[in-house]
Length: 610
Image (cartoon, rainbow, N blue to C red; front, side):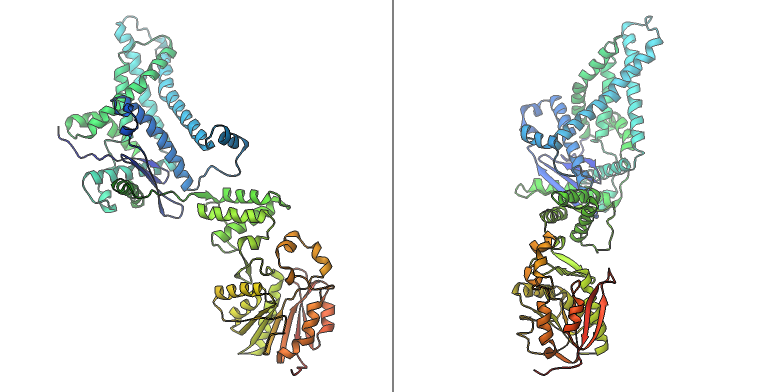
């Protein structure tokens, strides 16, 4: 017999990937939803070192078969997690908690065990129970008494074997019609081609692997055919009983023994390539025409990645293994976040879902107007970040603080407890300033008084190129404004000042959104506002007008001739502001409610000298 080169690495196709197993390393490569190849690897104790049982012929085949089924199912489930079809969708159930506490195990291990058991029962029912009882039905009207006792058992046994093969081939043909199974069979081809290329001494490149045949004589399909053919040979000489259940039990009891023998034959035949072995391997190679298909180059890349990982780790025992970056489907991710937010939070579930969407848009780096497609997947590190934000929101923290940024006038700004969250209505202040800047021409200087996060002044600067000064009494607010200046790459002069006290120059335009909430009304604000946003930026004194009065006294000293001051007003305060500020005035209403005057523009007509 001519011996052929046969490596110790075998494989299995999984969802959008390939698993390769060597003597002591298993590596699974999967192409994730974003087209990247992820590899998860692990080391294990070689079979021969586990127990004496793995060294005993036939018995080692049975044990290897069980281990391969178990690890194969684990790998398949793991690959589905990478591609986003995760199973976990919320907090652990009462049963999951009980299993973890009482059984000291993850509920997924229980589910996998049940799934494996059901898979075995299905296979036993389809390929042993069904052929046995179908044979009984076929021969129920046939009289075999005129034949010898051997033939009386031989004919039903051969018929049962033929039905078993027919059922198996029909089953393969039916599942091959499924889209996912078709792709699985193509990854099966990529696995075979990669192993064959290595056994032929070729460098593992896509070009070299592509030239290999899809069939491989160590394939699991060949093993299954070995079992079927050998079982027909063995069982054909056993007695056939009138009681079909006895026949079923005998065939079930013989299955492990037959699998163990076939394992030994497969190991021997895989090492040789001549006419004798080709005859024995022919049925299995024929079946592979159904279970193994031609892969594309991207599938071959995945198979090569898995194979190379096994080679690398087995060559260097000190090299670290890798772990998948698990993806969560966008539907399950949003549901999980909404459930976290809903815990101890008032409001409708729809509101929580919308907040969950906003969190996901931010962690995924998408525009606020983007839509979350149901086909999108969330990487594990992004999901962990999103859940951390959701838990902050659950505790009552404003959503913008929890996320760490907010969108104002189309730009993102860093926000936290150092400054107020810029509101949508304040965008009117920016629009009014931009209109005034157009009237004044070039080289316009702007002061953003009580700047807070700096959102108003920075937005004006980005859209008009003015000379900008940001001022606030709070050092913390100015540090936040500085971060936003750096974020947007603009030039600005930052001054710590109690209104105008530390300012030394005049400006063409002053924009200001001062504290204007009456002190007595602070306690009536939303809990998340009064508990998280800085009181210094909210409290406007007894009537909410204290800062306006101070500004009205001094602002004209810091305006150039024909300068303009633009102020945001609280609800019900506009009438008082009109009286405080002399000069030409213009009032702009609130975006959402035209009945609410929101911004006052005062054009200086009586400039005072300092």
